[in-house]
Length: 257
Image (cartoon, rainbow, N blue to C red; front, side, top):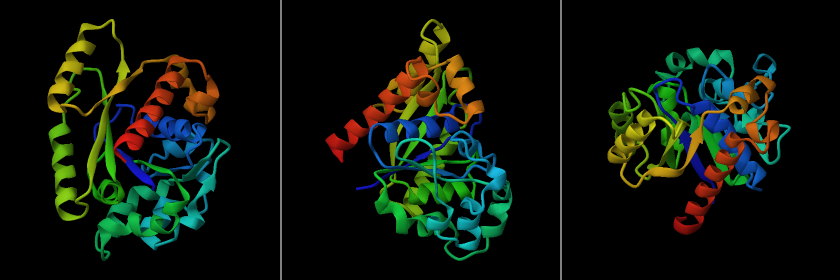
């Protein structure tokens, strides 16, 4: 069975792409066949696994707008068990271009369905907005993973995100669940961090991952080398945390399937 997880939060700077890239890479390193789908026009997940988005021939834009099949878009990365369906700069215009197309919210699902069975996990990096592209990701996904940074205004906009999840669940995907909430940029020494953790646990009872992602220099440096952090520095805190997150997700799947 393939598990499809959309990593989404319309608030920028919360570690969304960092989480999508590193979770996908850690799942691959743990012997899970993994596909990372980059649906963010910025394409940072694509460059984060050393793919030059300027040289990509077919991308998530072609899949969404032209109906290009996933087989033509997917690229094998240099990393174990990890493939990517890359983004491109054209994707910025995709929302407008698919707005009038039939079954516009199903286009990602339709394009990727034929390769779904090739993977144990499909991780979707969503754009920092609640538009049509994110709706496509949530329509296709089994669950949504929400990264939240341990800073002021952490919960800002989350009601909006949950409204979108409920709308997609009601209209397009009645099996969509919350995979979990991931606390990022965690610093246990700060009182603010503890306050944010308490607030988030109130907002999402029983949905907060045990694993937290600390701030870390190596985690920040890795994308500029086109490397997931476990391949950049296997023993740093960021690597250990994302490996633990991948293990937590695998274990939850094993227990609750």
